[in-house]
Image 1 (cartoon, helix red, strand yellow):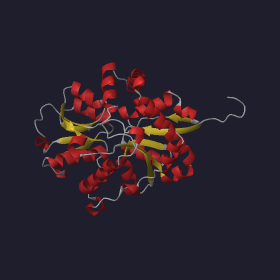
Image 2: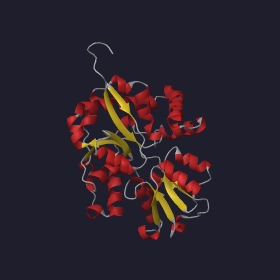
Image 3: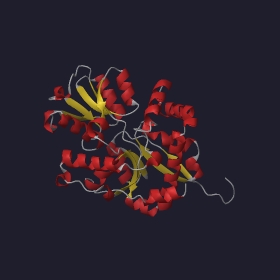
Image 4: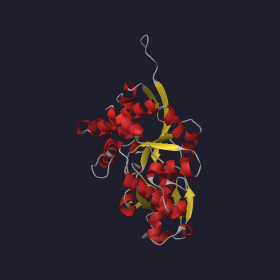
Length: 309
């Protein structure tokens, strides 16, 4: 280190394993975080409880996961969080065991989720409701992150259904599980991956958050640049321990202009409203009248960051 040069600020950023992390891999490996004076660790969450508890307790400064986790922290745990950046729609697909012919057959059966009261679990409940099944009509089993849900379905045929995102949806196809549809095709627009932090931490570290956001967007732009395709696929293969063909397919889906990463990680406000509407309908919160997304977001950090890019 040269005289007068300060050490980089270290951030602990928790995330779930999946294709949604490619912009973070790029920001880390291509030097965009370092270029903004940041050293970023990316621990993988085993489940939503650890992610939410770790953020609340200060073990992680930022997390990237479905925005519904931020809503749950604010409303259920009374931990004030702030969403500052978007990401994607979750790339979720509904899978069932090969012997399931229709979703109506899940009556009396077991479905598997991460946490039973947030995010992809609520999508699953909504899809089943649309097929005539209410919450008491099936058993819900919490297994944790997507990789554990897939493992559970592969090992135990009594686990009949789960929402699986990338790359696990492709693994599920190859393992012989049956795909029943894409989540956004079944429930409409959905804001899944976002970045959020404790509102108090964000307020005290607004400059840090702006620099972090800049590096993230730089990583996303690098990811979406076609000239970086081969290197990005290799980065995804290494980061998620994927064979080249699966990494390639994941990259193609994640960078698709219509359903892939949001340009510059902008929040999908219709998708966020749908997240809140699902919580109001399925969990019965707010007397069935969801609040506006603005309760949970502060885009001033994002706007400040974008002005510097």
